[in-house]
Length: 351
Image 1 (tube, helix red, strand yellow):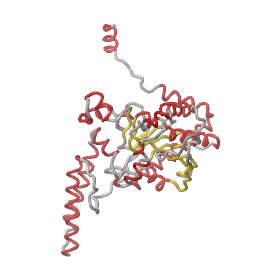
Image 2 (tube, one colour):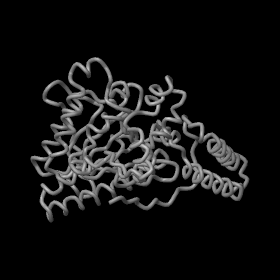
Image 3 (tube, one colour):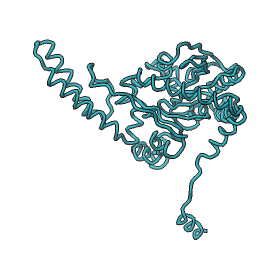
Image 4 (spheres, helix red, strand yellow):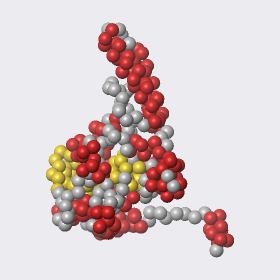
């Protein structure tokens, strides 16, 4: 059953310099931020009371920020999901988990840093936490392949899921990837097979599974750890069979039409909950998770704790076989459409 959680109280205007990377649609906000900071500096240096002017500027900033983020286009949502300051897997581990013990290696080839796995405690629940990690600085991004996992990453994830199944721990996955790594080495080591095996094994894993798309959710790279009983999205994340740039490259032979592709793909949380692809939208603080990671993590923790508790209760009442059957049917029913009489008539004429 779809649900949308309540948005938290928004914070006022910022009291620090603007973020280094400003999306085009946030340029007016950045100018207003600069005015606020400049006036604060003048107040401190000249010892003149500008509190009334600052209050008005902050109110204007909050109103503009709310209006901007209430009316984001699909392409602007993609830009927010890719924001350089957006919380990553390690940030959520620090903010969510009282305990986290990372597990390494797939026991076949190596340890893929693009997928992190570990035993964790979230909201009072012991879980197996798995997710994509993109890396913070340039060095770590290169090490993590910008969150694009190799076959050993998906095999490590599956190994840890099997471990969770053995000890009766729910599995929680955080998806944030533009897609699986497309290099020759990954293909040689069985990229497609590793993802396909994860899809099969997760569909019948005998423990509850919860997935949240926290940033980007691209193609099979995302789906490889996203076959779950409950699938949710952060408010400004995106989830699609292909990236807007990839879609634009195929249809328009270049990336310049990525905004049009983003709109056509219906990849935002608003679109996907309407079409039943996801079950819930986890709200982000006003202006996105990058502006207030603590509030974003708090909302995420609440959703995980509530959902894990609900799934555990369901298993106690109906047994694990019933949960697995519902999980299987959930994904089998995706893509079902209701045809109108006019559509059926046109198709009949075409035949």
